[in-house]
Image (cartoon, rainbow, N blue to C red; front, side, top):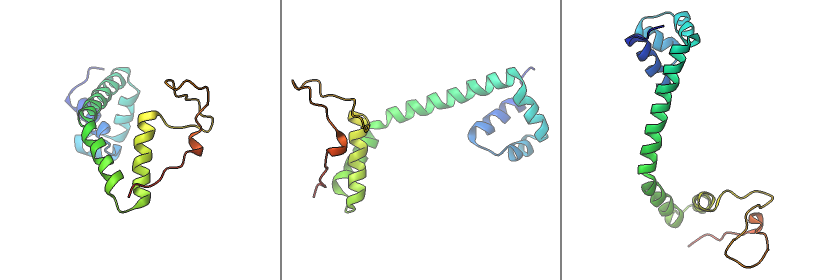
Length: 129
């Protein structure tokens, strides 16, 4: 199948999250036609390509703004009046910095000269006042 403008518009709307019924009405095709297109290798390939481009663009944007996000999480962690929210923000920062702890702590602190395993379940966090 050679893809035309309607095929690409259907893919764009589908990736955007439009309901199949709505996107079919918008581009003027039957739902069965759309599902037939979804079975076509060329259409599926273009769908995957366009989806990958959108995901890569989002990844780049999130990476570009990651310091802003971390700064905001830190602000919440240290200034929120809600103790549970402060704890969750601190927990999020720790999990994403040190790795999410497991019940069987597989992590070891490499720079410490002991073989003692860290059990994060036993670590008690105190709220910062």
